[in-house]
Length: 171
Image (cartoon, rainbow, N blue to C red):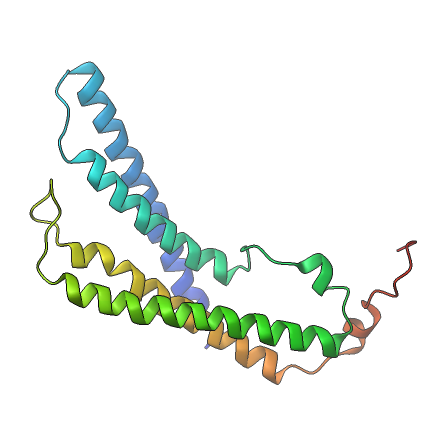
């Protein structure tokens, strides 16, 4: 399961790279048309905003998988293994709750948007744009559930016990 999830996140990472490239192209086109041709594109600002939102959420999936979000590793890594396990479990449960809210209410929002369209891009449905919420929420749910299973099945080993901070300032 972990290998499959890793491959899925690698695809998401490539998708994020494509979104970034698309964002750069759209913004450069907007700047070129506005300042070189003196003919502003009506749609570029809105489309760039949508690309940025998608890039942010898909990037959050990749960051979550690689554990690059804000954390308290300096404090948590100093805890004794049983205490660290409890803290990891509580933290992952809190994150799981947030991701469930993102997934569920993102789904509700996407359903409610229906056939609404973007203002300057009538061929873009707002439900397509908001679909990033349940998609990334679901992906992060999978990551958290996998991580939670690892926390619950993990047994502290001798190396973790030695890594515990003794409280000495000389460490």
